[in-house]
Image (tube, rainbow, N blue to C red):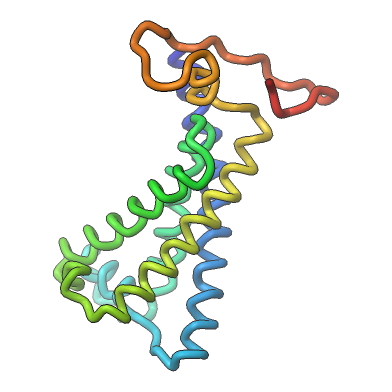
Length: 187
């Protein structure tokens, strides 16, 4: 079982890295469109956060894109593991949106660059929530598509035996990997 769990984590991390990269690209495109429409300037909070956390003298503007894209790609790894484990669909993406927002706020507040979101102007908060939700939904959609190719995942296999959490249902046995001629979705 340990080997199987590690395979889920490794494969999910790879799926999530791809999904997170796509998610952050879509989020960034959406941000640029929104900024053109609203006239809102670029935020350099990601770059200032990274500079502060690393103690780097590099100007925050130069670190901004690296922090923005890096966070999106790396956090996507978690969503990939979620999907490969069987946590898929809108519920999983909403759970992941909370993780994305929590990660940003923890780093920004710990470094002293940001302030708690409940202290922000409401329009700034709304814009941030919309963009992070776009990221989470896009990342989740891609991660779920990639995970579906390998079957339901351990969590969904467990749920198919009996819905809910039940301590009397032990770990499920792994399903055979699909051969090149088999359908990837399993009953």
